[in-house]
Image (cartoon, rainbow, N blue to C red; front, side):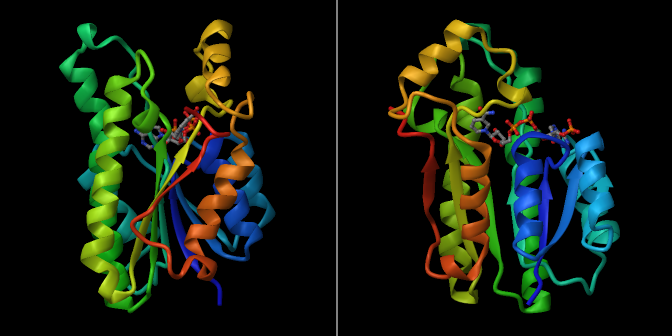
Length: 242
Ligand SMILES: NC(=O)c1ccc[n+]([C@@H]2O[C@H](COP(=O)([O-])OP(=O)(O)OC[C@H]3O[C@@H](n4cnc5c(N)ncnc54)[C@H](OP(=O)(O)O)[C@@H]3O)[C@@H](O)[C@H]2O)c1
């Protein structure tokens, strides 16, 4: 049966790759991000009947969730999966912490996924779908990296939220898991220097960036029937990082 999957942050990077793999699995994609990249537009053009899009800013979580569940997935549209992938990285030393920037990051990385989870579960209950929630976390929440304390804290919050959600809604067949990705070569990590990059690779057993395809395939697995007994988990896809 075809499934409807809502994915945030589809314009580029991991979100775009997840959208590709969700389509390859035969499911329908409902994507959001602020902009539409040429790569995303090309994906839409390939299968317009299965790829849907709404441009919006997740920095306003409640407005964004209302628009998604009224316009992109209007009432009566079943939802089988939510992938909370969109995020921003505010990297700096803790001694430079700026509360306005921290708040803006928490709005996108934590509040938006939580508000979308609320709306998604409500839709799953109304439509009686045993849905799957997947949150994209980061290895930085587990290993710690200099300069990433604030960013990593958003992922730690998401992981705790996911575990509680799994406990709360498991009896209704709704699952919640996280995929903690290692360093991937995307726009988010593009500002790192070669030296910083090398330091990160040296902390991974595989000594290379984490493949987008490997992370996306894990997300798709957690969305599907093959993961029917997996909930409350954090799956690390990070090349063996320490
Ligand atoms: N890259 C890494 O090394 C790494 C490592 C571990 C975990 N992660 C996680 O992996 C996920 C994907 O990251 P990525 O590397 O693919 O990042 P990316 O290339 O920067 O892409 C981020 C996506 O999120 C969207 N987005 C950002 N702010 C938004 C907002 N306010 N409203 C709506 N959409 C917004 C962006 O679209 P628009 O700009 O068009 O809005 C874009 O599609 C994130 O959760 C990230 O924390 C990344």
